[in-house]
Length: 221
Image (cartoon, rainbow, N blue to C red):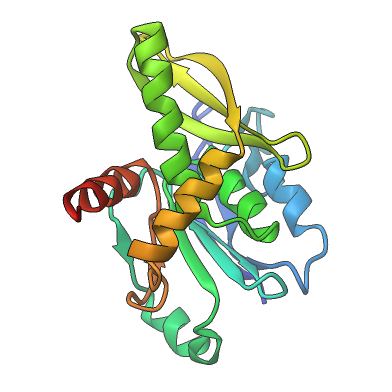
């Protein structure tokens, strides 16, 4: 089921105060259009009834895909590596086999949905992404910030990422061989086989996780 919360906001343009209902939880089984509305940001669009000013209200949203056995909890700018929701843990106690992920930005939110619904291991993708980002940093001489998987083509043996580099955070596309994912998957299977069983709640499998995982992997030799 979907859940709504009410919130008072003031229009940034005319200062008109109003109450808006924000959707904080969606279920793809009961709402067939949920995925489309996430990707076109329909759940976050807002328009002032007085002056017509339009904006996006980026708010926490839980994406629940029971068919594909995962949940992704989008909490803008969250800095925690793990978060537990006692209500959800109790409600979905019988579904402990599903992956539960926490993300801090909208691009990561969409990336996780795409990866998990296609049954890719997101931890392996993060390790592969980190490896490719280091190649990009070395070849460009620029700092690499956010990065997202844009394409996986096993038939062409390619794995592609979009990174944001330099002080202006310009977009930079980089592809590599799909073998990089396979090698990363081997590391996850050997050193982090129970990542979802050992932890309750929603896990933030991101660049920081990948750096720590790589450090532990190197120190294990």
